[in-house]
Image 1 (cartoon, rainbow, N blue to C red):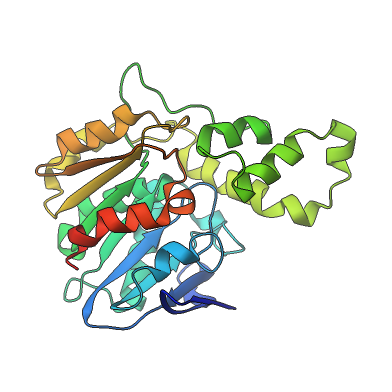
Image 2 (cartoon, rainbow, N blue to C red):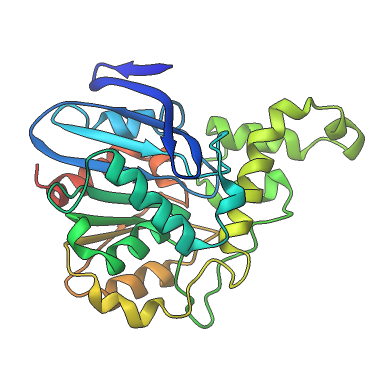
Length: 284
């Protein structure tokens, strides 16, 4: 499978062998600039579909990679991933197989759950990360500002928390599902809903307890020494802005930016805005 636009190179999606099984990965791009790796959110947005426009904005002058974690989009190996630490070492294996080691460190960018994954890699192995971009990232607990409940929500309620524009195609589809009676929803072919339920199951394994944070992370962020950009949507109804602000406070030299009209899924609703904010950060 592939996706292409006039703004960037063709993106190719294929399977890749890892120590836990085959995973799905989207990649593409050319150029001399340092590569960019994007880590998806709990929603499991795919690089050849939902975030293709965002990735292609960087693919004219650098290689881009978007691996799917085990349990998301059919990637194998979830039974071997018990927590975020397992996900970190699985991802380091993926980076090694891509040739993105300490001699060729990539820029890491992560949305929500993916931002948490990126920062957990960054404090453990700062030599493996050229720069860090956290987009609506979870991973920290800020008293009085909890991450809102993700699991077991009605589709339409969740859409209102993660999208600013309720007419955005994914949000509109979620509202359509939310309007169905239990009987009508049960009649929807399971294959249509499978990606969502599988993503929620995989996200729960990584973030159920403690709920989407690492209690030790605030003490570790002093090890994050690479340039860091924190981006939050002012209208985010799932992850409070206070969490992004705390990341920016605890990571030395971090730059904090707000997307005024953005909610949680920034790379879907505002790919051009996010790319503009990231451009100087990535060095071109």
